[in-house]
Length: 510
Image (cartoon, rainbow, N blue to C red):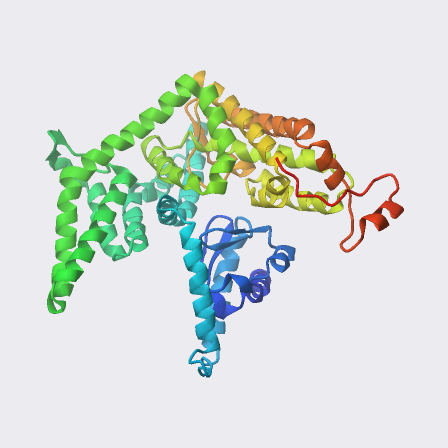
């Protein structure tokens, strides 16, 4: 059975590789929760439509990397097979062709074209968005451990409440809490790696934050406590270490580099961390937790509507990545993030909108087929297929999906104002996949009931808003039909006299 699964995953990888230009065109391979993220030398070699047509591909997204949506679980299994095929392909690649009469080989020309494309793309990449992508690259690799430990923590809490296996629950508590106790080290390691330093030095400096001995040290007139500053302190400490390390590389003689550079880097950044960053980051972390709770307790309906309604646009702009350190900080402080369940309502609005599109466009077999194949993933919180395959191309349904998300967010925000917090012990999943990670201050039963209520509100409002306001009459005439590829409007009208073919026109506008 395991061999069959491996063969299937390898077959998926083998189907994708030639459609992205082959092994020689792939410069980097990573994955997140749902997407295979590829660095490509020449984007023009990618066959987008053929990729989208693969049964296991839910959609494609082009950002700083070329992203192929495979879904949770599958992407983690396909990625190693894809990496293996890329390595094999590059190892078997022929030597570069001789230079032509002009002094440039075909590979040289292809590289020059890729460089020009990269320059053009760089003009559209703002420093702020590039910074947010770096932050995301630091935290995204931590998500699987956050999810696993979060589910174990929830299971342990349930067993404690029910009085089951009291001899086992301490072991489960240790398993669930070990990663969170040392998460600062992992953040420091990934930060140094992302910013161009030595990863292990970043981890070593961040480890100072969780070292128990810091409790004997005072800074700014206050005793430090282990873990003070959390992931924000680790992030700052590792970034500082990277810059100090780079400075040392410039001035320290090569013969002394292996001794002097790591010593100075750890010493200087360590002292700054202990006598500055830990205190400052601790105050910021406390302010984030206090601010998030105050916002939901006092303006929950409004805050929930804004967060739930704007999350899909934030995802489109890449700005949602700024929330990852905030989620992680809240999980460190109180065991769960109160923001994620509200943001997950955006996916509920998207599902409701997609169902309305399905009902509205009764004659468009192509769109209805896309919706039927993407809805199961949408219910589990994987929204890319519905966003990029349905609502965003149509325009207005994307806006009405946001309305549904706002309604669901306002519902959960209302209960926050009434004293019931709904949180998630990890980041990453949403939709129905978030239920195993839910936690709150009023018991698991009420927490799940409120979250379920928010999902239902998001589904219903997203559906109604899209059904009644998601289409203009012109859009219905244009999209509520199924004209075969290559069929003329006249032939369509002859075959379907009750459904007039649309006049040639510009794409539908919001």
